[in-house]
Image (cartoon, rainbow, N blue to C red):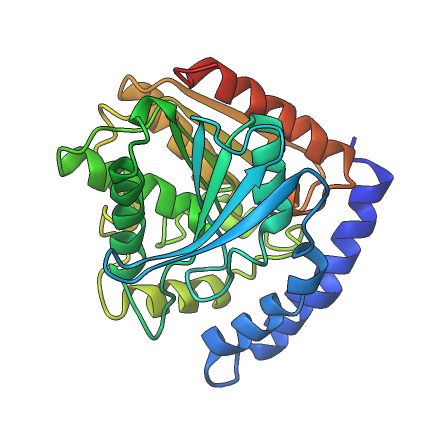
Length: 309
């Protein structure tokens, strides 16, 4: 059973995200409206907690922008997490996801590089994927061993995490030690049964138009089942260990279930855990006991796959 605090967060998200999105479906420029709705919560999550510092990055030659989150205890940790934020590929920023990236840094004893990748519709696919691959290769160029790297992301960023692994594999780059995908959006066609069965219970994601419009904005006229963007349709052989976390009541639940099943069928070391009664990407809310529990799993996974101690 979900905590009382989770119920309060669900009510907050329904009133500040889902309901405004529903009202925006028939208005023009939905991606920009969604960006404004999502961005309204940035101040809530942007504060840096005690124990970490922030270093902005603007590598214009490499085309890499973002920020380092460094734990005070290990500011030069060999462990590195490349974090790809969510936001439907049209919204979000490293600043908005600091509550997640700072927890990754503190719980995984790792430096976290949060990538500020280009957003649609101004920069449709494959811009975000190109940026993620460039960032990973830039980190390799800094002397970071792939065995000491994780790629992680939530929602659209979880889908981008899978796309990045596939692009790196197909491009012959050394793969990271593992990947963490939080409620990943890996099927832009939205064919999972939970798109319909969880349409009411999900407090954030709006199916029946909203998700589809964002997918088309991202793809810019491209096919929604392109395996480079919808990783569920790709060959998953040869990928590193994967940890997947999602809510059992969210629209994207079946993306996680089908991804885990397909990854394991392809010989990938994949672990899926579903939580009941929680909102999409509840990890943003540090006060939830379920967030602490989720990061217990993430820290254990990191300790298992990282090469260094």
